[in-house]
Image (cartoon, rainbow, N blue to C red):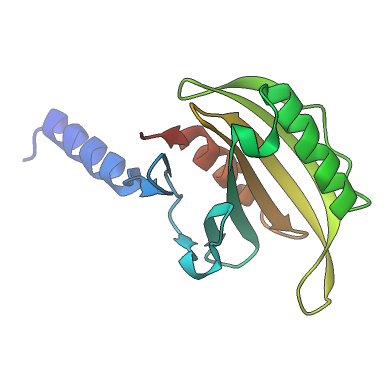
Length: 172
């Protein structure tokens, strides 16, 4: 007969190891922990993009943009967030974000907001998408995390993006 306490410890150990993941290095200064089923797409990365990943079902994607303070000529997270909202509004006329919620992610100032917009693919296909976005002020860089979910994506897609956002950290 198996000791019940030993069984509980074994189940907890197996469960936590099934959900734990190593961090994905974005570049020399940042990392994020991808949810199971999300894959990197290194081919799509080109400056200033530093990370692109997609969910296994293709219904959601995450893109991370990294910019040096002097390149954007802005010093505060609030100003950076406003600038990104303005630029996204210029790119997507029906982009109408929620009021950013200011907070902190792993010791870094961050702002989180949602929106939806009509998106056009490179081949001209139009589709409705929901966005979950986060701006972060790092030691020497601003980051914009863009989570895009196609209309009809399962509700868990947004939750997965939020969990990945919570894992974002600077490493250098």
